[in-house]
Image (cartoon, rainbow, N blue to C red):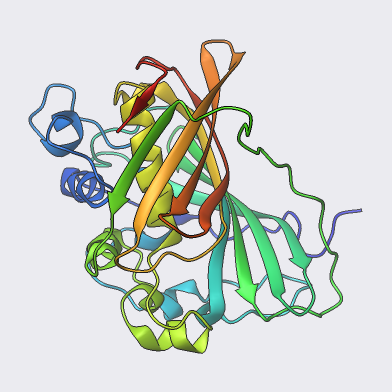
Length: 309
């Protein structure tokens, strides 16, 4: 029997993007000048970075700054409590690509169609809400990408809901060195740039929300680290070709603070689904904790297997 809220569909949300949005996104997640197909709109192979759709649920159709908390007050899910969007953090994201994104949405109507997959009561720590969001071309019904998300509502549990299933884990190999290692030095401005894509959560700009949630101040978007790692994997293993990333996921394991250095380690597994090879990865704060765990991607690997970058 389905649990509370399962199958509930939110009203479709129209979304749009411009070439400028695509350029900003690529710049904000670490694309470099040798990848002009992500950074220069007149490049003959100009492309939107394939994980861009994760931002569209926040951005919608606007080019303006929005009130994040007001925008996150969604239609209530039947059968579960109403949760406070001011105390929510990301749990995990999985993105599947089915069709390449056009350079902009001009001339077409796109919608995000979201349904609830589960609402899980984790007791005192909080509640997990798992959703599936499809980026759909409205006139044809074609699905371009699918994002499965879990959001963790901090200290909003103990309402008598189901605990939820055990999650599937994809641990990296521990018996050998990673095939690729790459890193990035964040700054106090990293989150302030990334938020301009449309994710205006004050937690990533002002210290007060982070203090109230027990983080001690500003933390960087989990989705910044998530997208940054996706870019690094595609660049170092997939030849920076957006067609070479089919599936990508990671769990948000611990916060990243402005000024932390991110270090990603990736292992090619040799396990293939057709031409797609499974790659497992994790991201740590240098000298500290894992911040992205359960990392898994399906990539057409083109670059050399060994390297430290």
